Amino acid sequence: MTCEVDIQLEDGLQCAITEEEITSICGKVLEEEGVRRFCDVSVSVVTDERMQELNLEWRGQDRPTDVISLECERPDDPLLAEGEPCQLGDIVIAPSYIATQAQGFGTTEADETRLLLVHGMLHLLGYDHVEDEEAEVMEAREDELLSLMRTDRDLGGVVLTRHKGEDAP
View (cartoon, rainbow, N blue to C red):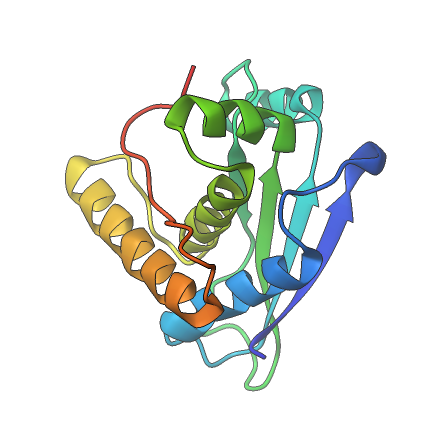
């Protein structure tokens, strides 16, 4: 395993996928991205209200959202001593928002959560989607990773897909 994942569930919330799968997804993204350094990742599951507070604080948007990634260190940072773990960062997800979004996209909460974890991990590794060219690269990588994970996990025919565009209504 290339990482340790600290999972925090706020106010007794539940996530649509297991803690084991969250850890597996984070590890698989690091492995497939060629990260050799051991990384620590935090995944927090929060209410829509808390997500709105974080979205306002970190992104200047006064509304809830599905996922926010807060990068700490990069695995290739030359200032990290050899063998020193990388504090990769935090991924925050809002299951209620994700449930509504999944309905709008016609997918399941679990599939949407998987997608957003991959998306969040890629952000922590430096991917972005502000510019069209960046978005194309990031979305293509999400598709590749989701396809690998679908094969690896034999999800019984569940199709994991990435969504283009804005959040669902």
